[in-house]
Image 1: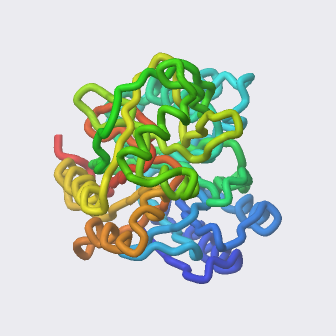
Image 2: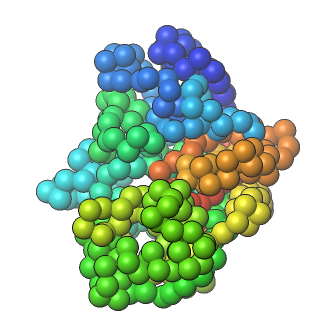
Image 3: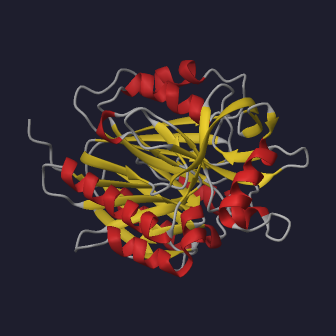
Length: 377
């Protein structure tokens, strides 16, 4: 595998690296992770992306991670040295798009040997969970997966996924690699109240808990526990420390990040919420979050039984905002040795390490330690 990091984030440098990788016979696929401050648009990117002959996937994120540093500007270009297959699903939010019917000809039968699967989505699309459920039906529990949602902190949905088709909006990309991998998932949040039943919801909007307006229930718990008031503090500044947790048997909570308060008292979350599910309200501190990133890295390392070559790190952008200057320590707990580290700060994280169901997480650290060597049988 080959990795290039361009701190300038310019289309010209990306063009140069893509041409280099496209001509290199050792490389069979290309992954591009780009910072939002690059200013990539369909106008300045689509022409050069269309000229790439090898399979290409990637995304534009609030921050990209390279070694122990996160930055809003720059581009990581990873040349994959094993076979890479790519599927593109457009119209992810469109209810008229039959996800299973669309995926079947793209993905075909599950591979005979376990592989790593990189899954990137537009983080502001609806039906992400429905997409992942359909994808899991095709891949099964033996496919190690990592990924996340692309997008911008201004919450405006715009083209943010990189492919041979160009820069895409409201889409999903699936790249399968012929690589061995271990995947770790941890978040560091714990319960402070609940469970509450979701009694009204639509897609990513939570409308009511226990038949009461969702925000009223949430505000009562958060203000009592924090000693602060939403009247004196912006919704995001207070809510970033109090996510929802969907309980899963013998597994980590599936965390849902309350992103904004709507005029009708409902809450918009990153990722779908469903009527009938039960949620807890969670809380964490800086040390529990830092320890979670270390745990995810240790889990990933332990699952790989061949020599590692790279760590992929997908970490929620809201963890960056919560940790502030201490986010550098979280990066250091993943970049602990000479192994290359690359990744992104995402709007939702995707993983199914250890044979679990393929899930869309929030406020979570996901690490994949991988090798282009085969696992021992």
